[in-house]
Image (cartoon, rainbow, N blue to C red; front, side):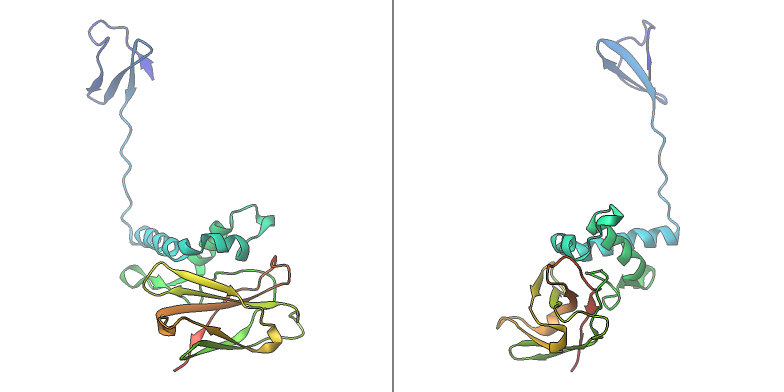
Length: 208
Protein backbone atom coordinates (compact mmCIF):
# COMPACT_ATOMS: atom_id res chain seq x y z
CA UNK A 1 0.00 0.00 0.00
CA UNK A 2 1.22 3.53 -0.80
CA UNK A 3 -0.11 7.09 -0.58
CA UNK A 4 -0.66 9.52 -3.44
CA UNK A 5 0.84 13.00 -3.18
CA UNK A 6 0.18 14.01 -6.78
CA UNK A 7 -2.47 16.65 -7.18
CA UNK A 8 -3.83 14.89 -10.26
CA UNK A 9 -4.74 11.65 -8.46
CA UNK A 10 -5.26 13.03 -4.99
CA UNK A 11 -8.85 12.50 -3.88
CA UNK A 12 -9.51 10.02 -6.68
CA UNK A 13 -10.93 6.57 -5.89
CA UNK A 14 -11.46 3.60 -8.15
CA UNK A 15 -9.41 1.57 -10.60
CA UNK A 16 -6.64 3.00 -12.76
CA UNK A 17 -5.07 0.29 -14.85
CA UNK A 18 -3.71 -2.34 -12.47
CA UNK A 19 -4.00 0.01 -9.49
CA UNK A 20 -6.83 0.57 -6.99
CA UNK A 21 -7.18 4.04 -5.46
CA UNK A 22 -9.14 4.59 -2.25
CA UNK A 23 -9.51 7.07 0.61
CA UNK A 24 -8.33 6.29 4.15
CA UNK A 25 -8.10 8.85 6.97
CA UNK A 26 -8.21 11.72 4.49
CA UNK A 27 -5.36 10.33 2.40
CA UNK A 28 -5.50 8.83 -1.06
CA UNK A 29 -3.99 5.36 -0.94
CA UNK A 30 -3.02 3.04 -3.76
CA UNK A 31 -2.54 -0.70 -4.02
CA UNK A 32 -2.17 -3.13 -6.86
CA UNK A 33 -5.03 -5.29 -8.09
CA UNK A 34 -5.04 -8.77 -6.53
CA UNK A 35 -3.81 -11.40 -8.89
CA UNK A 36 -6.41 -13.80 -10.23
CA UNK A 37 -6.31 -17.33 -8.86
CA UNK A 38 -6.62 -19.94 -11.52
CA UNK A 39 -8.84 -22.81 -10.51
CA UNK A 40 -7.20 -26.10 -11.25
CA UNK A 41 -9.15 -28.26 -13.60
CA UNK A 42 -7.04 -31.40 -13.36
CA UNK A 43 -9.12 -34.57 -12.94
CA UNK A 44 -7.44 -35.43 -9.63
CA UNK A 45 -8.17 -32.03 -8.07
CA UNK A 46 -11.73 -31.95 -9.39
CA UNK A 47 -12.25 -35.42 -7.93
CA UNK A 48 -10.85 -34.30 -4.57
CA UNK A 49 -13.26 -31.35 -4.44
CA UNK A 50 -16.17 -33.64 -5.25
CA UNK A 51 -14.99 -36.12 -2.61
CA UNK A 52 -14.80 -33.35 0.00
CA UNK A 53 -18.39 -32.33 -0.72
CA UNK A 54 -19.56 -35.94 -0.66
CA UNK A 55 -17.95 -36.71 2.70
CA UNK A 56 -19.12 -33.44 4.30
CA UNK A 57 -22.69 -34.12 3.20
CA UNK A 58 -22.47 -37.63 4.65
CA UNK A 59 -21.06 -36.54 8.02
CA UNK A 60 -22.99 -33.30 8.54
CA UNK A 61 -26.02 -34.86 10.31
CA UNK A 62 -23.70 -36.68 12.73
CA UNK A 63 -21.73 -33.61 13.88
CA UNK A 64 -22.81 -33.77 17.54
CA UNK A 65 -22.64 -37.56 17.76
CA UNK A 66 -19.10 -37.60 16.35
CA UNK A 67 -17.90 -35.56 19.33
CA UNK A 68 -18.55 -38.70 21.33
CA UNK A 69 -17.88 -41.48 18.82
CA UNK A 70 -14.81 -40.14 17.01
CA UNK A 71 -13.10 -38.18 19.77
CA UNK A 72 -9.34 -38.48 20.26
CA UNK A 73 -8.19 -35.91 22.84
CA UNK A 74 -4.54 -36.82 22.32
CA UNK A 75 -4.69 -35.76 18.67
CA UNK A 76 -5.67 -32.19 19.53
CA UNK A 77 -8.08 -32.20 16.57
CA UNK A 78 -11.84 -31.81 16.41
CA UNK A 79 -13.72 -35.10 16.16
CA UNK A 80 -15.47 -33.95 12.97
CA UNK A 81 -12.14 -33.24 11.28
CA UNK A 82 -10.82 -36.64 12.32
CA UNK A 83 -13.91 -38.31 10.88
CA UNK A 84 -13.63 -36.28 7.68
CA UNK A 85 -9.95 -37.13 7.25
CA UNK A 86 -10.58 -40.84 7.75
CA UNK A 87 -13.55 -41.00 5.40
CA UNK A 88 -11.83 -38.97 2.69
CA UNK A 89 -9.20 -41.72 2.63
CA UNK A 90 -11.32 -44.80 3.26
CA UNK A 91 -15.01 -43.94 2.97
CA UNK A 92 -15.52 -43.43 -0.77
CA UNK A 93 -15.18 -45.43 -3.95
CA UNK A 94 -15.07 -44.70 -7.66
CA UNK A 95 -13.65 -41.71 -9.50
CA UNK A 96 -15.18 -38.71 -11.23
CA UNK A 97 -18.72 -39.49 -12.34
CA UNK A 98 -18.72 -42.82 -10.47
CA UNK A 99 -17.49 -41.35 -7.15
CA UNK A 100 -19.80 -42.25 -4.26
CA UNK A 101 -19.79 -43.06 -0.55
CA UNK A 102 -18.66 -46.54 0.37
CA UNK A 103 -20.97 -47.16 3.31
CA UNK A 104 -19.35 -50.50 4.09
CA UNK A 105 -15.95 -48.92 4.76
CA UNK A 106 -17.04 -45.48 6.03
CA UNK A 107 -16.73 -45.04 9.81
CA UNK A 108 -18.98 -43.13 12.20
CA UNK A 109 -17.21 -44.45 15.32
CA UNK A 110 -13.51 -45.02 15.84
CA UNK A 111 -11.75 -46.27 18.93
CA UNK A 112 -9.69 -48.95 20.65
CA UNK A 113 -12.45 -51.33 21.78
CA UNK A 114 -12.96 -54.68 20.12
CA UNK A 115 -15.63 -54.36 17.45
CA UNK A 116 -18.45 -56.74 16.50
CA UNK A 117 -17.88 -58.82 13.37
CA UNK A 118 -19.96 -60.92 10.96
CA UNK A 119 -22.68 -58.35 11.51
CA UNK A 120 -25.94 -59.12 9.72
CA UNK A 121 -29.41 -57.63 9.79
CA UNK A 122 -32.84 -58.94 8.90
CA UNK A 123 -35.95 -56.83 8.44
CA UNK A 124 -39.33 -57.78 9.82
CA UNK A 125 -42.66 -56.12 10.52
CA UNK A 126 -41.53 -54.51 13.78
CA UNK A 127 -38.07 -53.33 12.76
CA UNK A 128 -34.55 -54.67 12.34
CA UNK A 129 -32.95 -57.68 14.04
CA UNK A 130 -29.17 -57.39 14.20
CA UNK A 131 -26.86 -60.34 14.85
CA UNK A 132 -23.12 -60.31 15.42
CA UNK A 133 -20.14 -62.18 16.76
CA UNK A 134 -17.44 -60.89 19.07
CA UNK A 135 -14.09 -61.93 20.49
CA UNK A 136 -14.69 -62.62 24.19
CA UNK A 137 -10.92 -62.63 24.83
CA UNK A 138 -10.42 -59.15 23.35
CA UNK A 139 -13.67 -57.46 24.34
CA UNK A 140 -15.21 -56.55 27.67
CA UNK A 141 -18.50 -58.18 28.75
CA UNK A 142 -19.64 -54.83 30.14
CA UNK A 143 -19.49 -53.03 26.77
CA UNK A 144 -22.83 -52.17 25.17
CA UNK A 145 -24.16 -51.87 21.64
CA UNK A 146 -24.66 -48.55 19.85
CA UNK A 147 -26.89 -48.63 16.76
CA UNK A 148 -26.93 -45.83 14.18
CA UNK A 149 -29.08 -45.33 11.12
CA UNK A 150 -29.09 -42.73 8.32
CA UNK A 151 -31.81 -42.22 5.74
CA UNK A 152 -30.68 -43.05 2.21
CA UNK A 153 -32.44 -40.10 0.59
CA UNK A 154 -32.93 -37.46 3.28
CA UNK A 155 -30.56 -35.71 5.69
CA UNK A 156 -31.92 -37.53 8.73
CA UNK A 157 -30.35 -39.93 11.20
CA UNK A 158 -31.03 -41.60 14.53
CA UNK A 159 -29.01 -43.56 17.07
CA UNK A 160 -29.66 -45.70 20.11
CA UNK A 161 -27.47 -46.78 23.01
CA UNK A 162 -29.26 -50.09 23.23
CA UNK A 163 -27.84 -51.57 26.44
CA UNK A 164 -27.29 -54.90 24.64
CA UNK A 165 -24.12 -56.70 25.75
CA UNK A 166 -21.59 -58.23 23.33
CA UNK A 167 -22.50 -61.71 24.56
CA UNK A 168 -26.17 -61.17 23.64
CA UNK A 169 -25.17 -61.67 20.00
CA UNK A 170 -28.49 -60.21 18.83
CA UNK A 171 -30.55 -57.07 19.22
CA UNK A 172 -33.91 -56.04 17.80
CA UNK A 173 -34.43 -52.35 17.02
CA UNK A 174 -38.14 -51.58 17.01
CA UNK A 175 -38.97 -49.04 14.31
CA UNK A 176 -42.08 -46.95 13.79
CA UNK A 177 -44.96 -48.20 11.63
CA UNK A 178 -43.99 -45.80 8.83
CA UNK A 179 -40.29 -46.71 8.90
CA UNK A 180 -38.97 -49.14 6.33
CA UNK A 181 -35.65 -50.84 6.99
CA UNK A 182 -34.72 -50.66 3.31
CA UNK A 183 -34.82 -46.84 3.46
CA UNK A 184 -31.83 -46.69 5.84
CA UNK A 185 -28.17 -47.48 6.22
CA UNK A 186 -27.31 -49.02 9.61
CA UNK A 187 -24.10 -49.25 11.63
CA UNK A 188 -23.25 -50.78 15.01
CA UNK A 189 -20.39 -50.29 17.46
CA UNK A 190 -19.52 -51.14 21.06
CA UNK A 191 -19.00 -48.51 23.74
CA UNK A 192 -17.72 -48.91 27.29
CA UNK A 193 -19.80 -48.39 30.44
CA UNK A 194 -18.72 -44.76 30.78
CA UNK A 195 -19.43 -44.00 27.14
CA UNK A 196 -15.89 -42.67 26.75
CA UNK A 197 -14.35 -45.36 24.54
CA UNK A 198 -15.66 -46.79 21.31
CA UNK A 199 -14.97 -49.58 18.89
CA UNK A 200 -14.89 -48.89 15.18
CA UNK A 201 -18.35 -48.88 13.67
CA UNK A 202 -19.38 -51.75 11.44
CA UNK A 203 -21.89 -51.55 8.59
CA UNK A 204 -24.93 -53.78 8.93
CA UNK A 205 -25.54 -55.87 5.82
CA UNK A 206 -29.28 -56.43 5.45
CA UNK A 207 -30.24 -59.88 4.21
CA UNK A 208 -33.24 -60.78 2.09
